Length: 79
Picture: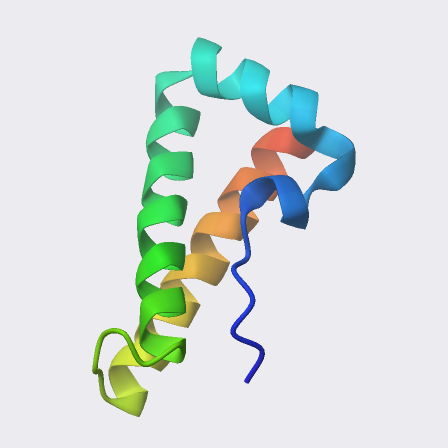
């Protein structure tokens, strides 16, 4: 297990400017980014033993993060 936070600017280092632009200009993208951040933080807290959770709960959160990341990637690709 890596315990490394997967922040959007780290996941898409070549799209930092586009991330910022979409966050301020597109409400749907901003909500996706906020949801990704919330889920990502929760995963990090579980992986670092700050918040207890079952393996199933952690896997569900990881699937949710991946789904959000896929949506974000698709919107970034369209820019």
